[in-house]
Amino acid sequence: MNRLDGARVLVTGGAGFIGSHLVDALLRSGVAAVTVIDDLATGHRENLDGALTDARVRLIEADARDVDVLDDSMPGTDVVFHLACLGVRHSLHDPRENHEVNATLTLELLEHARRSGVGRFVHVSSSEVYGTALYAPMDERHPTFPETVYGGAKLAGEAYARAAFRTHGFPVTVVRPFNAYGPRSHFEGDSGEVLPRTIVRVLAGEAPLVYGDGEQSRDFTHVTDTARGILAITESDATIGRTINVGSGSDVTINDLAAIVLAVAGRHDLEPVHLEPRPGDVRRLLADSSLLHSLTGFTPTVSLQDGVAELYGLLRDSGTDPAALLEQVEDRNWLRQAVRRG
Image (cartoon, rainbow, N blue to C red; front, top):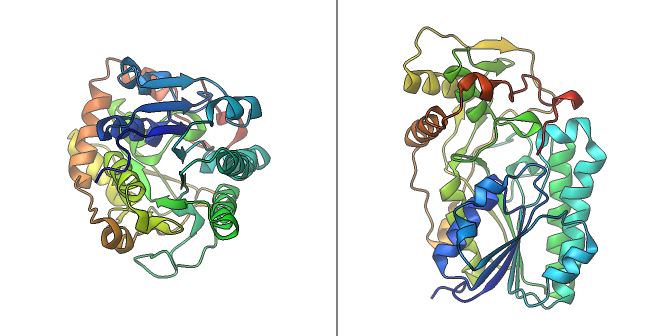
């Protein structure tokens, strides 16, 4: 049974990287209507170009912190997917705004949704709430010791979501995606992530940059798998009140990731350049997603090698000069002057 068939859904941050892929997946699931709220601070309208040709999709270009926007868009909604956020590096130069978006906004949305009679609330959090792995793979019982305000604010948002379930019985699920990558991922400004940034540098003939010793490792999960995992969680009543990882179940060091990109590009003449460690950089993240599989039967399908090759090809064939793409990449994108939005 497809529980989303005919549903009216609201997606905050739906023009963002994961959010736009979730919108695509929702349309394939048979929803009746999708309302996206996104101020396009880090998301991009073009991420929804395909979706906006569907009459079921409405984009509200606004800050989800605007109470009037929530009052207008929430009534009649069956499911809320909350993905609006500001990222890890942003929290290093603007911790207060990061907390307002990642924590306080979550509380406001939960209250609006509960008062509006929303039937399901899916809070998309982050594996950054864990901090560095104390053991691996990391299940949902792993202690939470976030390294940054971003991780702390995401954890606060989770706590508000779980409180809404425990206090009011509001049907909430907390989702913890591990490191999503793939089409539409950010390489620019303080939203830039390691894989697309590395690809852009290599396309422009520049060496990959590695912070610290490069032995940090991440569980990279293709964004289409992440979106499918979120839908699988939403379609199961067994996930209500639960906190659930979405990851690939394998990790790779940043050194090895750079080597994969160089191999895909055929640039064996380039060697990574090591810079000083980034502040607040988690040492290891590796998901145990067995709870997700046991509750929904979901398993990821895209290998890292295939996903890297896909993203490399998309950026190579984007029609934009790699040098122009590189101008948007900030080597130290946690500094205030690194912010580039719009």
